[in-house]
Amino acid sequence: MVKENSKVPRLHRLKDKAYDEFKEFLVIFVYLWVVFGLLSIHTSIVLSEHNVNYPEHAFAVINAFVFAKVLLIGEHFRLGTRFGHKPLIYPILHKSFIFTLILIGFHIVETMLVGLWHGKMLAESLPVMGGGSIQGILSVGTVCFVVLLPFFAFREIGRVIGHRELWALILERRDRDPKLTS
Image (cartoon, rainbow, N blue to C red):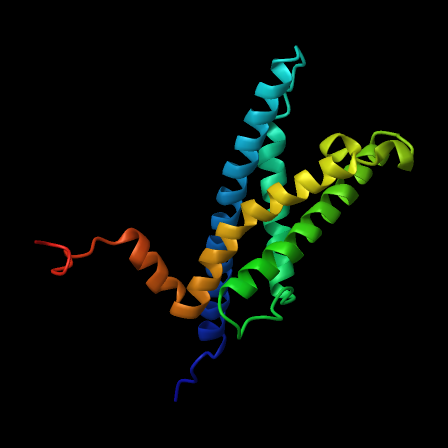
């Protein structure tokens, strides 16, 4: 008699899970890369009007990579799930707010660590967000919050109707709706 190898199905499940998580990471990464890239372009245009060179476009890729991982880890720990049973507007707004705080906090820590790595003192390494004023910090927070709204809207809609169904609605061709033709 031949024994079935129970490790093979388990290995397939692990591979499938790793592949699914990679796809999820890739979607988050691309979304954040586009957003950070656009913000970087905007910053360089604004600064060029004042004759200031802003060559930091590569940070868009790095930040997208890091922040995508932070978002996945935060979701893994089920952060922002308090309103999951309420109408979708509540979890969308709540997650956008929670992850805005997380991303800003992570940005502060990341900037401080990079400063320390380059030999700066901790106080010198604090990031100057939005010019350093309360209005500037609130502006950065508001932009981050608004940028996360469509991201979490798609994720929450996918959670409710199913991710495959959501992607099918977005990407697959549908027959004409007879109600729309005259």
